[in-house]
Image 1 (cartoon, chains in turn brown, red, green):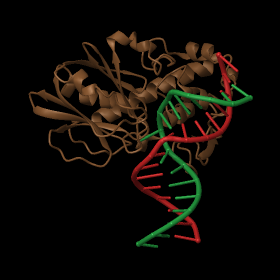
Image 2 (image 1 turned 60 degrees about the vertical axis):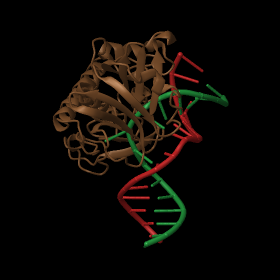
Image 3 (image 1 turned 180 degrees about the vertical axis):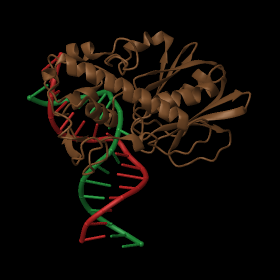
Length: 277
DNA sequence: AGTGCCGCCTGCACGC
DNA sequence: TGCGTGCAGGCGGCAC
């Protein structure tokens, strides 16, 4: 489910229900997900006020005065804001109960595959940016500093296929399997091309493609999930607009040639051999 | 340092 | 109907 746009839409959706609210309870229904939950999370958060929300790559950040709650949705996670007392579903693992003008509400983390994470980073633990999971991350694709020049410079010593370099997240964050496929299509670049052999002009095009595609997906998601309360868990508001992802054998929307599907590093890649050279 | 591969999990679509 | 297989939007850890 979540690549950068989904995480950002989630952040925007939950933010109005969290910011300035006081945490009244924390419920952990298992030991952890990918990593153990912080065992003292209840003591850390109950009675504390949420100051703001943020995002770094696909990590959702919930800021408190004394630290940051870091949430990752993995492959299958989602967050919903629900009225307190909403019945549990299988794989609802974590609740943050807050009080506000609407009464008590629950921020509920649902994650069947449990590749997600909930972590605490206290202000005593140093800079959040230096956290082991965050310090190797590349630039934010929707912020200043991301452009073709950066992609070009960062890939001079990379011989891996551009698709896998994009996915690795150490140059630019937030571009997952779908948006990597889609942005390479939009830029007309074959996903198998070694990253270091792509020139400056093509990277200008790729950077622009990434920006536009991510920004469009956020707008689309935001308009679909107008009210984040009790939305159903459907994924893929962006999927009707895919050009290549999940369209193996279907005619390319641009040239009509059948979209190809290959494997790169255990992940499916979709591309058009005619439009992407 | 860069690269490729493994594994963590459940759910679902598919073929038999 | 059941069962096995392969696949899924992420990513850290490891060996080389």
